[in-house]
Structures are given as structure tokens and as C-alpha cells.
Length: 613
Image 1 (cartoon, rainbow, N blue to C red):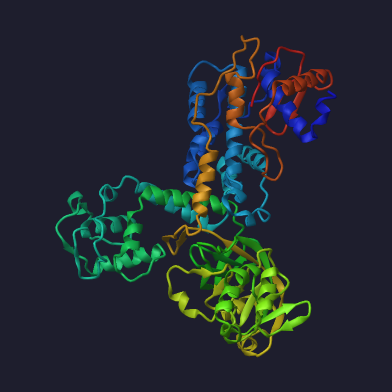
Image 2: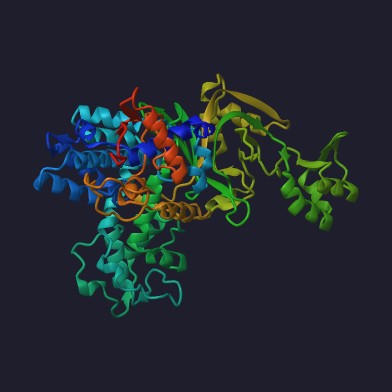
């Protein structure tokens, strides 16, 4: 016990619990354990309902194999139709089913991967707590297990729309229109041109819902045949497809559109699954008003939230950081003030890599753009080689004065953050006409800054649109603090449903690839039959199938805020012996130890044997 005391309390408890679950039981005590998923000696209707819910995990973008659905169903069927299960087997199955349900509810609410691993760390702190164990208990008491699933899933209309889209795209897997290769392009196909891939193109667009056909496509109609005319109906369908995939909506079948048409339905299914995963830890209902920027879509939305219903008040195009080297980070902070006619404080990295080298080549650029130095001695507007060197050394910095050439335009929205990212106006309005808009150094440029200012200043008395425009036109800088700060969320979603149509966007920063890699690395082993406990065996070693069963199904489901660790630590044999000895020594005062909500083990001087998981 002295050696065991060196472990922190939580670790000692977990080691003790694992050791007890692995080694300590006796048959008579086990027979008295409650088995809530059983109705007498046989599995209850709720047990079958639980397995059915686990089997439906795919509709939420989760993998049913991770919850051992096949093994659980096989054991339930055997327990229902075969010989009456022993108390040991009933307890094992009971706790395995509870473990699977709790893991499923936890994953459904919190996601399967920590957001930080998926390059989305900004959303961690704002996630809503969820008690999976309490939700499961309440749902079982009401004989309404789907209630627990509804409580665990994100309460967002977008989440349900994406689930419907996932079902539609799953139905397209193996579709005939993708069994043949769309012919490569020798040149862009313009309206009125002929192309041998027209029939196959029509079949794909019809399957995707962009083209309406008066008669169903026959197998022969999907095959590349003689050259056919790329006519008006197909041009309109291609425009629809382009709009849904973030492409130039010109109706011309160019390389970018051809590449998007090549994407298999299976790939879109995975994209939708990843988007559902992101929504599990993306805080979209964090206050009565929010501003959300979706990077791959290049769109900002400002909306009101009332009774968990979202009403978009402002929507506009945005320009985000370059995918190659100046990506916009994912952030969740509060908008606190607006600056009119702001100074642009040039970030040190931009000064070193871009501005100083350019000024060394083109000194006239200094006065033309309105730059000045700022240092311990104040502000200095005179350019010199020595001062440029001081900028490189970090003893001076540069800023750009307010004016028509200022990089941040006439207005800046400030939500303090470590990365010094802002929303701001820009004099380069022509870039908003591009379909792909990653051109900035990281800050976000706004297409309609006045509309966003009117939304943000709605709670500040007297700030009409005319007053906002006047403040933007004044010659000097000014700052107004918001009476009510507004959450700003810079997020990342490559699949959305808008007005009943499914939209897909390019994974410009590779965040989907990173999330997919994390989830695939996390995958658990394929389902296997549950190991049964044999009371005739006097000992079960640490490497036994029973031990593997515990490790396979996960561990614990505390009643905390949905953050329970579902996987037991791998224990050394010495730690297990220490924990087992401690268990034996406590047997006189604690004949039954109940840990968390799932693990019940008999603690008696006994031959050690697995009881439950």
C-alpha cells in the first residue's frame, strides 16, 4: 500500500478499478448483480433497441463497428434463443452493452477526436458539457432510448440536414453513372460544342439532382457514345453543379469542373461524415448573436439565435489567408470594438519577409503607401536604410497611416486574439469576384463592412448606417466599443446544406485530411465475439481473452461533463498485484465496490476472476 500511495488518487482509483474488474469476483456474489438490460433471465426489448441504435450510428457519420454491434447482436440473439445464460455471462453482456452505449453517446456529443488533433483547437473551451451516463439512465427509465441519442447529437438544423444528405449520397455509392470514366478534356467544352462524354455527364448530373430528366436514364444512355451537343439544359445543370462546388459558375466544362465531376459518391460520403464530426465540437449557439466565418466557403454570416433557432441577418463574401503560407487560424473570441480609419500595424513577419525587401528595391513605395516608423522615440515618417535595418532587428516597427491605400480600409473589427487576426474593409474589392478567395496574409477582408458594422452596433444607441458611413469617411481614427460583445467564430466546413441543396467546398488548408487521418488512426479492431467467462477456470491471466475484452470495449463512463476516459490504462503486473492486495485488505469493510456507473465487482477473499466490464 505504501508503494501504491505514490500514484495520484485518480490514477490509483483507475488502476484499482481495472485490477478488480480483471481479477476479483466470485460466482455467488456475481449472481446477485443487477443486469438492467435483462428482463429476468433473458435480454429485454430495451437491449435490442440499444443494439439497433448502435447499428444506426452510420446515419450520424459514425462507424457501428467501433461499438461492436455485430458481436453484441450475436450475443443478444444467443442469450434470447439459446440456453439460459449464466449470471456471469449475463453480467458480462449487460456491462458490454452499457459500455458500448456510453461510448456511442460520448462520441455523438463530443466527437471521436480531440479538436486540437484535427487543427481545430479554438473550439475546445466553448464546448457544452454532456453527461452521457445520466442521459442513458433517464432514457432507460422512460423506455425511450432514442431520447438519449437526440440529447447527445448537436441540436442544429444543419446537423440533421447533413444527415439527410449523407443518406442520399450513400444511396449513390456504386451508381452506374460512376462505373465508367468521364472522358478527359482536350479543351474546355463550351455551350453548343459537341463532346463524346455528354451522355455520361447527363447521367451524373441527373443522379446528383442538378439535371431533371423527363425519363429515367437507361444503361445505354450512360455510356460514352457518339459526339452529342452540350446544349442549354446541360449547361444550366453544369452551372448548378459549379455553384454547389464553389466553382466559377460560367457553364463551361473546364478542368476544375471536370475534376469535381470525377469525385466518387464514396468520397462525398466521407466529406459529409467529417463535417458531422466537426459539428459535434463547433460552438454555433454561443449567444443571442454570433458572427461565423466558414473558411472553405469564403463566406461570413452574422445571425441571431432565439430558442436555438438561427436567423441569418447578414451574409457576405470574404477573403481569407493564403493556403500556401499565410492561413487564417481557427478562432473563437468576442468582438469588442470597431475602429474607424484604422492604422495598419504591420506584423513583424510581413515587414521582414515582404515590406523591407520591397522598400529596399523601391524607396518611393514608402511615401506612396503612407508608411511610418514607430519606436521608443515616437513616430518617424522619414525612410532610411538604418531604420529598415532596425525593423529587421526588432527595435522599430512600421505602420500604415489611415487613408485610401490603407490595407485595412476604412473600418476594422477587433476581437482580441493571440494571432492578431481582424475582420476589415479592403480597397481591393475586385478580388471578391473570384470563386476561390484565399489572398490575404491571414486577416479576413469583408465584402460588406457597413452591413456588418450595422449588425454589430445594433445594441449601441444612435449608430445608424449613415453614421457608420460618416465615421468611415472622416480623416482621423476613432474607436467605438460594443455595448454587447458578440462571439466571433472562424471555422472550417467543406460540406453544407443550403436551401435543400448540398454544397461541397475544396479542402484548401488540408484540415479534412488531418481529421480523416486522426479518425482512421483511432479506429478500433473489427468486431469479434464477446469472450464468455468460464466459472470452471480457477484463474484468468493478464493476457487472457477476458482481459482483451476489457481493453476492447473501453473503460468507465463517469458522471462528469462527458469527458470520461473510455480506455483503461495498460497495467503492469506489479501494479495489478498491488491493487488486488489493496482490494483484498478492504474486503471486510467493503464487500461490494461500485465504481462510476458501470463497474460492479465483488471484493472478497477469493480466487480472482473477471466479473464485468
